[in-house]
Image 1 (tube, rainbow, N blue to C red):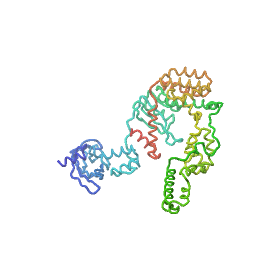
Image 2 (image 1 turned 30 degrees about the vertical axis):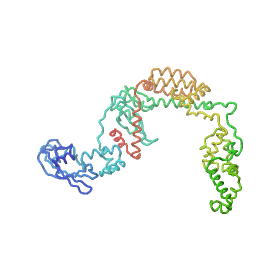
Image 3 (image 1 turned 180 degrees about the vertical axis):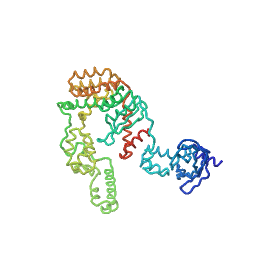
Image 4 (image 1 turned 60 degrees about the vertical axis):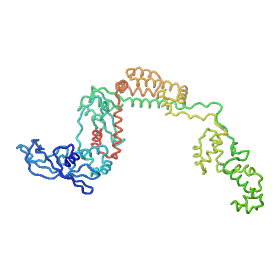
Length: 535
């Protein structure tokens, strides 16, 4: 019964193996077993034989147990091949699910290492297998990836094509993706027309090709799959449209600023050392310092009334004689508190004119004013500036903080966004800008009409939209329309069909991650295996 439990533990998916014993030697577990099948198939001709030639022991590494390395000492046999025409005279038996030819690991451990290599590659994979108590180097893991068989080739009905950088700005390759299953199909070593066209010719059957606006991929598709429908990606179309809008906004940059109105709303701050709220007219009634002065005044007058001298009072209260003398000569504590903390020089005094100037311009952020003062030599703390700004805010409040003029990027974003996604302030500023610039108003109208075509997949109306744009004097949109005309059929299909290159862009990002994981030093064959097999 004990042997059955051990066999179920180690070889639960393997038939024809019997465990002899298990020995634990420190950090090593040795499992001694033997094969029990009567016949084995010849590796040369496949004919099964029962004639035993000899026996020997294979040492196989297996998955660790209890963080101990496991070695299987498996006794196997060599058989004689009974087929006279077979070139193999003898052959070694292989246990299905446990051994493979020339393997020094179990089939289960080999599969685990292959999956780890595909997920983590060399260095990261080694760090993980070390924690699993399995010896393997990074070169071993990379060899396991390269030894994996190629995936079964197939040609998808809807094919996505895009480029990716092997070395950014210098060397580019091509990724092919099945849009319907969202799985990678193949990686090509470059992005040339001949390479992509040859692949399409060798793999006929693509009915739809999703691509960006690249003329090279368009030409490759026409050569390799002449009957396929080309679909231009909507994201790239929208990106080109946004670039055209930005050019139009740049041409009218001067009209983005709001015109200056008569009567500035800036607040005038008098050029005084302190704001009106800085000099209280009455003595302090509360606070740590004022409470201490009142207590000391009461103690000194109480002892002085008993006829005790000032020197003795100072010694009893632990105060300086001059302090005791000043307290004794004041009839009330209020005489000491009035003006005690006013009229004194401050480290901020040399910088107050600058603060007044910035406050009149609407700069009400204490943190920004503090950083500006630091650049001008101020060595005090931020709390001093915050307190002074608070007093300025109470004495000279701003009616309305000045609003920043919209930038080119702001206006471009407002025009290309859906009106419902603009807040009230953005919608108001955009309305004012369009009112000052009729060309931008026309541009915004055309952009909204194009957005309706794209969102509702009404590509059949694209020709009418192009005619309306060309009837207006809008140079930036004319350039965009001319670009659409070079690939008009693909653009119409992109605005009409449900297919897009989103899955291709996702795999492009995944390829970037794999490249970073391999420190950017992976050869193309290794990268291709990881992309195709890890999916």
